[in-house]
Image 1 (tube, rainbow, N blue to C red):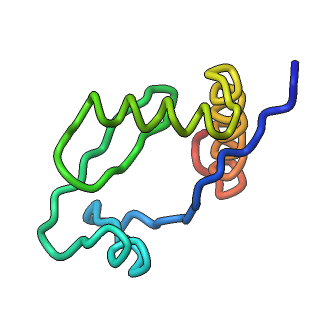
Image 2 (image 1 turned 135 degrees about the horizontal axis):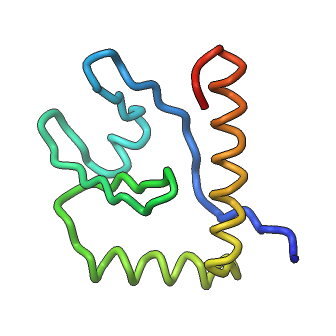
Length: 102
């Protein structure tokens, strides 16, 4: 199986507060013109993966952007599955190292 190629995207780690709040880094709030009270859309991709996007749901736009990103980075859905499996393994190991159920 060919090695999965990393997509050309920015990745940041966010921490969920005890009240379920996420803080979006300033660079992203500025880049996407996000202010207090802005609407974000969380799209559940299954397998423990999701996308967080500014604005209200736009299924056609999301599909087109995902297809374009995959094509630009020469990624296939199989590549994305491999990345998802690696992420799941990492998360499970991370939780277990903290003594939490994985």
